[in-house]
Image (cartoon, rainbow, N blue to C red; front, side, top):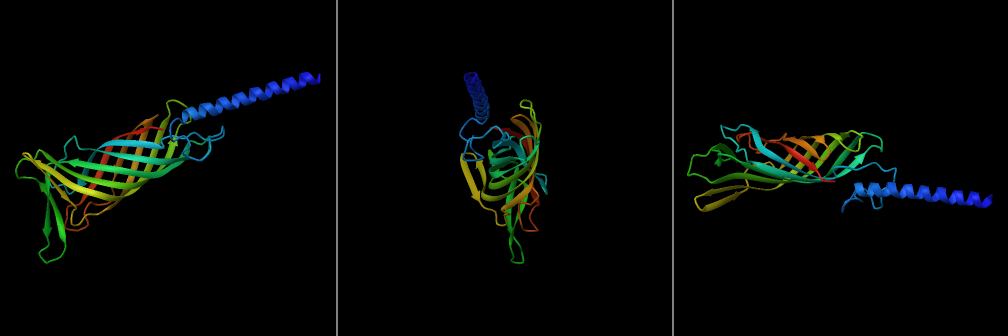
Length: 246
């Protein structure tokens, strides 16, 4: 009798251990790749909530709004973001959580305008004027801005494994680390760096909404591009798609 009880106990232990290993293996497969330990130094256990969208990229049409002075943006004005984020669900069963991390943004606005830098007649600061370009034909005419950013999101998503809907309203703030104007006339290419009254700190709301790994993306910049009150009041706006890799 004792032998039967011992054998039964061993069988139950082996079965339970096998089920636990299967659960852990499934979770590890869901977190495949280099970043599967992104939320800690140890392997996830069966009680750990699933993690999503820890590395994502956004591709978007970028332009500006405000005092455009009849300047138009080309339809192929495209930029991108790269974000590495901590995904923090409130619990294993909660549909709500937050995401926070670090990002890099590249704005590349192709347009038919030209910038002029004008000294104020009273001898004060220089301001920036933005108007349609009227000189020799430019084969390339784009303005580039690169940012280091801190994105934050409130993450709401459905609980099912597949066909998962996601709604991520958020906010991000960034510092401009590079900017230049690039144009080409005939076979000559030109670059001009730095505006005299550039605002390097930018922030505003973001939104990502979609299903599984593919979402729509939008960003509205609450700050103006230039600091001088006499400069054109321009603000960035982006609309595109977001891909969550893991």
